[in-house]
Image 1 (tube, rainbow, N blue to C red):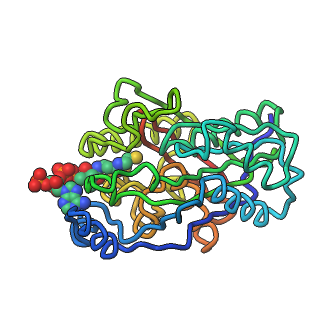
Image 2: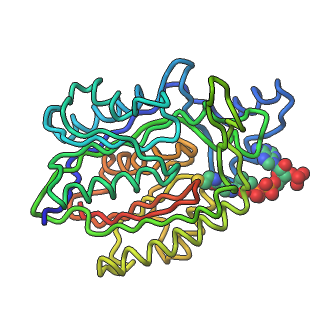
Image 3: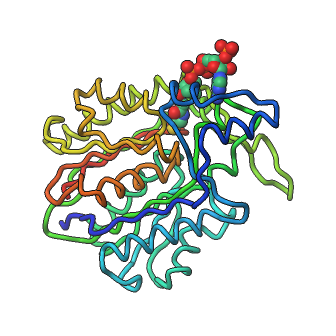
Length: 324
Ligand SMILES: CC(C)(COP(=O)(O)OP(=O)(O)OC[C@H]1O[C@@H](n2cnc3c(N)ncnc32)[C@H](O)[C@@H]1OP(=O)(O)O)[C@@H](O)C(=O)NCCC(=O)NCCS
């Protein structure tokens, strides 16, 4: 059975950077009180990128995908599978993946979206890995992309300061050399209420609540325990010790969650990739953006063992182990 090897990565962030101070000043005009000090102390976030009105998830996804193709040195015509992980698709349908396929001119292969909120990228990566191992695809684009700012309630300071927009992508190719060596996914639907955007469009009207709602403390606890458990499960499955991991690329939700997780797993800070300070939580885009940043600045190198981890609404979680 072939392995799925990562042969390229790319990221794209919308150009508008909003600092905590800028956000606090803007929210003050809506009588919502927050501060740089509170946000940094509780989350480690300093700034986020916010898409301008009219910029959609498929636009961000296409730019990240093109950057990943350029990095891999292959043309779009070689792609026979595109999976986009997103909770903020442009439309009800067609899928964002089909829109990206058309934008890239990669017509013909399979294209579909995966919805697992902030775990979306690891769910999509695991799916693409299964396609490649089964011989059903040779070269896949796996993308996490979000315009999460579009589902934030800017009068809810407990959530609106936490998120940002962006997209990240990897190119996977069938190879005889090890690539993805382990994957573990999990979900607990009974916890759906702690993080949701429980709205819909029905008969031409928005029904329910279209904004993100969260029980922050419940999410915090479940995120740390499920990620720690998943890390052990995927290592056991792959026959690898946690000490063999060169880089941990966890979902970038909150620096305190990342630090708790690192301590629980015994992984030193020097092996943990952090971008949440610069990007905030970009949901499905956070893991591929962090992975790409660490690959491009030379930290993640060929031969390294990397663990990527996602966690989020559903409640969902997952881990993927990759030999670079
Ligand atoms: C959201 C989170 C940062 C809140 O931190 P917390 O320590 O749990 O804070 P609480 O919600 O208990 O609120 C504490 C106080 O801060 C206030 N507060 C909340 N958001 C605030 C903000 N942006 N600015 C200032 N004060 C704020 C609350 O109103 C509350 O005030 P009160 O004590 O007067 O009632 C934290 O729960 C968290 O990180 N959760 C995980 C969130 C996450 O990562 N979600 C995505 C996962 S995919």
